[in-house]
Length: 131
Image (cartoon, rainbow, N blue to C red):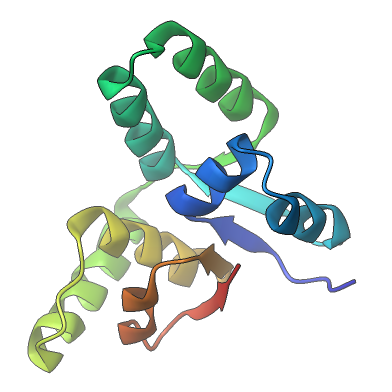
């Protein structure tokens, strides 16, 4: 058990929805808090809109959002976003815009980001775990 607090990336939540044992077991083993960025909720709704089971998928997302600690962006997040994006540009290692916002939330709130995306390794100011 560890007392770290986590921020879940979209691919981890999708794995959770798919009942992937490695993810469900990992979340059960945590003693810290688990947060979901509002950006991830938006990406999930986008995916639901593109799916053949729109209403079923949107209901799952609504239930998740209602039962979770959802972190929203604010002015402080925007400051972190600007810093992260600037550093990535200087290094020549751009990542997707939504992921910059997710990284900014992780840095702002000092959360460990759980993801399967390797490009978060370019954001040196956050702690990342590959699940």
